[in-house]
Length: 191
Image (cartoon, rainbow, N blue to C red):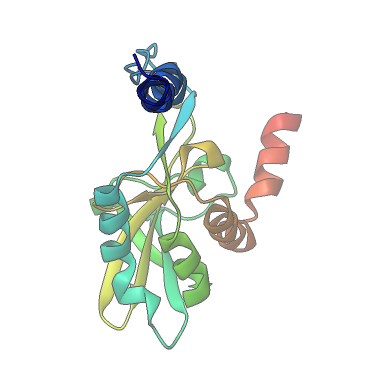
């Protein structure tokens, strides 16, 4: 073999050998299927990224409120019986047994922030009570529900539960302002 042919073979073989050695190091191992998780226990919550479809449903549900020029009114579905100051009065009854009570409003910026959330919540059964609320603005209405535990997210009609601590706090503050819920909790805990 002539020296020029020999060196030409070395020059051609060297990149092939390097590529063959580096290719396994650069390739990623195949993705493992997600490990199966145990069933959710009562009061337990898990958080997952929202799918594109879930995100689109959330934005579509909130769309009528995102460009509202006035604050969006928030109504609480309250029991028809008279508020007796007890803790259980804050629990929303079944819809036919409730009466909507205006408790305040949310700004469009609060709802725009809610529309950008990208985390959904999965939770087990809970002993916490649920408060059913309705957002209303310019003839549009949207039913939502919250409970004291922020981990269970906001249940928005037609959407997956959404994790949004800021919106939960804003709604909880409206409830507390109107019904003095924290003081009721304190009495229950003290007794």
